[in-house]
Every structure is written in C-alpha cells, then in structure tokens.
Image (cartoon, rainbow over all chains, first blue to last red; front, side):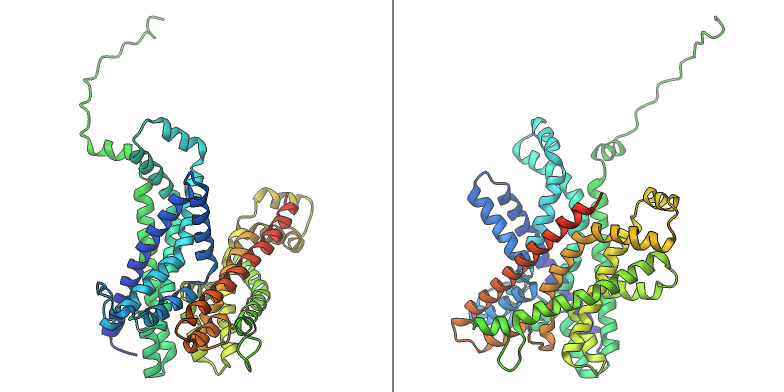
Length: 250
Length: 213
C-alpha cells in the first residue's frame, strides 16, 4: 500500500497545488467581479463572457489543455519558481500551467458567488455606505468585508470542490494524492485499501478546509464594536448614590 | 475533426459529445428516482437509512475521479458499466442530499392543513410534500445536472470515448498547430451544450415555479 512517506508527499503536493491555484482563482474572481461593476459596457461584457466560459467548460478539459500546452509550447524550459514539492524540475512548468488551469476552472464560480454576495447587501446598504463619507478605498473595503460574511460559506464549499479538482493533475506527472493512489493501486493490486486511504485523506483535508472557512466566517461576522469594547479597560463605576424614593411621600 | 468530436472516433460510436449527453441523460433518469427515494427514507426513517446516508456522505466527499477509479478496479465490470455506476453513485448522493433538505423544510402549517383536511399519510406525502419539495429544489437540481454533464469528463481516466477522451486522443495525434484548435473546438462544444442545457432547464424551472402557490 505504499509507505507513509509517499502519502505525505502526495498530501504536500496536493496542498501546495490547492493553495497556489486557490489563491490565484480568488484573485481572478475578484478582478472579474471588479470588472463586472465597471461603468463601461464593454468591460462588463468581457467580464461576463469570461465568467460564462470558465463556468461552461469542464475543469478536466481546462486542465488537459494546460498540461498539453506545457509540453507543446516547451514551457518546461521556462525559468519558473520551483514551488511544487516532489514534482521533477522538468515538469514544474506543467504544474504551473495545471495550477493556472485549475484556478481558471474555479474563478468563474467564485466570481458569481462574490457578485451575488455583493448584491445581497442591497442598494440601500451600498448607498448608506457611500453616505458615510469614507474614502474610496475605505468604502470599498467596508463593502468587501460585509459581502465576505455572506460569501464565506459558499466560497468554502467551492474551495472543497477545488480541492477535489486537484485530482485531475494526476493525469500528468505532477505529484499529488490521486497520482500516488493510482501508483500504489497498480503496484500492490490492493485497490480498495489504497482508495480507502485516499478517501480518508481527502475527507480529512476537506474537513480542514471547512473548519478554516467556518473560522473565517466567525471572524468576519464578529462585531467590530464589540472587539473594541473588549480591548478597552472598563470604565470606573460611579459611586452608588442614595436612592430617594417618593413612595413614602405619597 | 468536428464529426469525431461530436459522434466519437470511427469504430467507437456513439462517442464524443453524443456519448457525454447520453451518459448525462441516462444517469439523471436513473439517479433522480433513487436520490428521491433515499431522501424520503432519510427523512421518514432516519435510523433505517443511516448506513446508506453514511455511504452517500462518503461518496459526496470523494473526488469523482477517485470514485471512478474505485468502481472500475473493484468489480469485474466493463469500463462503460463501471463509469456509469460511478456517475450514478455520484449523482444519487448529490440528488438525495439536495432533495432531503427541501423535504425537511416543508412548512409545518401546510402539514397541519393537510392533516385537518383528513388526508392520510401516504396522500400527504405523495400529493403534497414530495411535489412541493421537487418544485422548490428543481433549481438546485439543475445546477447539479449541469455539473454532472461537465463531470462526465472524469471518465477519461478509464478511456471511455466521451468528449474529453476523444479530445485527448485526437490532440495527442494532432499536428504541431492543430492541437489548440482541437481543444478550443471541444471547449466550444461543451460551452454550447452547457448553455443549451441551462436554457432548457431554466424554462422548466420557470414553468414549475408557476405551479407553486
């Protein structure tokens, strides 16, 4: 069934692939959302077209395009940073193109989640935020923070799906869990045992992502005012004053 | 090229886009009643259906590629049968969870009204609760079906001749410049089919929504 070392290499490879492609997809999604609210119609059209294309084309095909492109365009000679652990130096560019493909595969979905979270705030709330007289950057950050609370749960679910999608990298010589599973199953013929280990690893990693997302949701939804009050020293209580009651007078 | 992408490679037809569509439709038609049945069991008899629910939860938490690999390597099945079973498991697990949440969310006042009207438990479920949950959950189910159509590409690991596999085979043999055109055509076919599917399902959703109170 393979040693613990090889599984750990797979987990490490999957984690790095997920983290890099996930971060990239969040950035692309953010850019797409920002372009989607542009005042120019052409820019909005470009944004919606990219979103529709990335949502309509399967991630498996995008990953295959990325993998083949790396080989055909001889990208493996390109001087790229070697961030993917245990993947041979000659296939680092393949790993980069696959990470980009995975990012593109999720970016459309994430952009829709972010856009709908922004729209959930409502026109009144957005107008209210504008009236606060904040600077453009502060105003943007405030609305981003408020929509992030709404978007946290669906983004977490998408990131779990994104984690599962990293298995497509196993179609190419990039070290991750699915590739390790395939290798061990072929070597030992104990397919069920090997796959059960892989399922347990994926379930564990999914749980970590879910817990991370939940923690982020809690942190985002915490009231800033309450935090400030907790940090400030308590005010000195005024000395009790004698109570005057007028009951007896009546 | 386009004929091979749509119909499949010569000697291996139906394949390509046609096979992807057939797999999606076939799996949906079988997985939908199974999913609904499992959802009803989960709400009606939670203890009885607990092992099945656990199994489906594991299936939902497993990447489809791994599920396909497991089914193909454990039984003495043809690759197409193994692929179909893996997709069935995947789809039924998602449909049951989506449907279960809507069956559980059935308003209690409507339940009480049906009881006051003197309807028996079977009629209450068959005529009111299940249709209500189906109409309400349809939009979520359509999202899953669109995802299922795109996920048929995972069967490429078994070499089943659907669109992704045909694209892989053709692009491996393509000339230096031909591969990008081939992959772009495949992507365009997926996109066009997905948009077509979205349009059809959107119309179904609207017509179902009109029936709701």
